[in-house]
Image 1 (cartoon, rainbow, N blue to C red):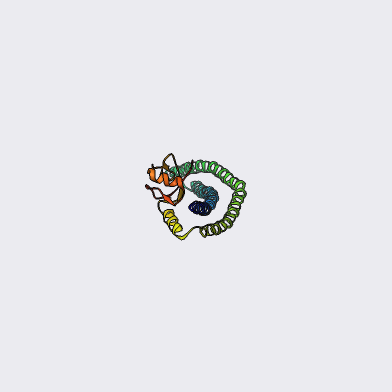
Image 2 (image 1 turned 60 degrees about the vertical axis):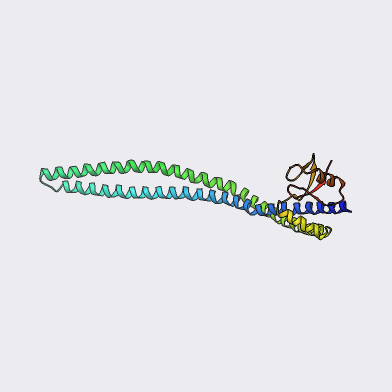
Length: 235
């Protein structure tokens, strides 16, 4: 009779193990979805970063164009003034101002050229990031859909597992379920373990000869004298 009770405990443990495994998978499901969503967010951020860099360079180019235009207008104004002055020192001063403006314009134009090259590179980075996202987004979305479908399946399986655990508990006497529940909390699963080579299959410590003898007889519920788990004999 005791052997039948042990079989019932083993059945309860098997049902409980399945339930706990499903609960672990369900706990991991939102993290798996979040990981894929994080990839999408990272790729979108890469696009936004590339776009911001590109637009920032465009703004800098526009500013340089304005600076060049202002400097050109000043140089033109100085040239007009040169036509009106009569004194050599005034003429030379305006010549100096014109040369200064031309140097300034040259510096702006050189900087503008660098910015234009940088804009081309920024556009390329933006296009690359956008292409990668477009290539990956459908795959990411399909993976999320598959993960959510799998989570739904897991919930259905978990409901069955919970029912299975309840059905298995109904066949185990209350004193044994109390012992089982206590051991399931500490030291934890598995609760029912085999004795092999004189050692507990849970803590792997050597059991006393009396415990091994009782486990062989399988007439009573026997617990490991080291960890307290329920032990049964296995050849």
